[in-house]
Length: 102
Image (cartoon, rainbow, N blue to C red; front, side, top):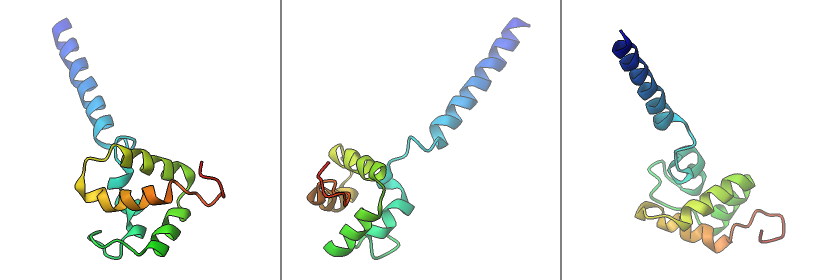
């Protein structure tokens, strides 16, 4: 009887922790968030980056937390898909339109 309860508890715990890891939202990269990244690209496949002025406008439209998240992820970026985006974001230096660099 105790073994059955222990197994049921372990199974329930594994399902709960698996769901938290799979879709918790906080585990996903801002660089992989299509809705967040779309304004920086001219196409839905996100292959063609917008020009400098449009990129900057899209960057300044983000809130400071999203900018900080993206900058942080760019600093540890190992995905070649994000190289151009990160290079442009780094050029802006995290500018948030407040007049100061941070």
